[in-house]
Image 1 (cartoon, rainbow, N blue to C red):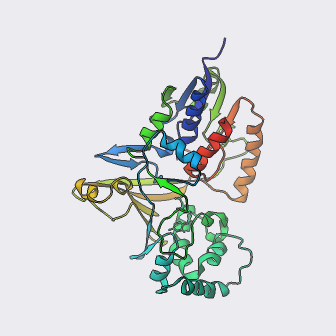
Image 2: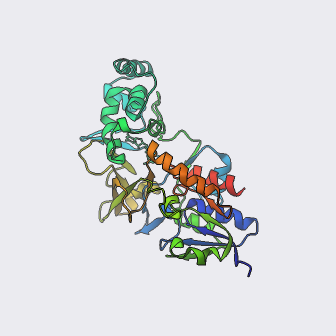
Image 3: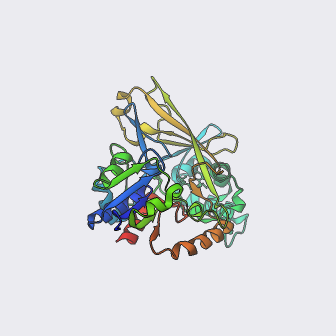
Length: 370
Ligand code: UDP
């Protein structure tokens, strides 16, 4: 009997939704399924009293790839949000990413030459030639003071590991600038879809059949029989029944609070708490992603989320892959099995075990589906 669908897409997050759109455009019939009771994976947003709450953590879209930017703009209008997080270290505030404002707040230096000289002076004490870990990478980029104030405590809270046990690449994501520019990203395009990500995903998957609240791996044979090909975006280790052991993740929990009668709680969407003692890593105030100027006070309430990071245990939601040598080796073994499956495409953060940004997931889906 011929299968009812050309593709079964497991997971309605970005990789699944972009694939669904591209495949449907080619005339294929797709069924999307998701374990959760809603679409969108971790980009899912929920409207709470007029504020789109990023239920699984802040998602700020940015890319320099015009093709990706044009692609997402078909499904939503993007606003002018520019991410400029503030760091709170023991009550004192600093601008991020590391730029002339931060250097002024830290050292009182006023020119790029003064800032560079200060960083050089701090680096010289350590004589790091080839940074071997995150601590060495951070010190050689911006010196000891910023490392100890803005990086060390935050990173150890976020990853649950010492900075000396973490790979250098994690910190290379952050720009270091000798200009007074608080834009967290260097990318050409940036914004948040007006109306939230859920509406954007809804448009992407229009015309496809969707089934929510069902676990593919619990009824794999039955679902496989429905389609000629499968796109799997869940955890790769779970797909292969953990035969080489569990891959490690960090999970995040959110303590979300609606504060009535407070229109503006912290004056910014993102405030990082960079000391080691505060138990949460950051507080997100969701309205600032989509409301600017007078609109902030016109909405009398606010919603904030305190974000706590911890080691993933079976049953938790996996968020960040822990890209150390052990996990890389385990992943390679799973990947070899995945590569040998000709009926199944593995894509996205969980199936490729990769610390992906949204634009990179879209790029990848475009590459794989064509
Ligand atoms: N980081 C830090 N201090 C900060 C913000 C970030 O040390 O105030 C480091 C930390 O190691 C983190 C990495 O930079 O894991 C990447 O941060 P990013 O904000 O890109 O992480 P995400 O938003 O993906 O959680």
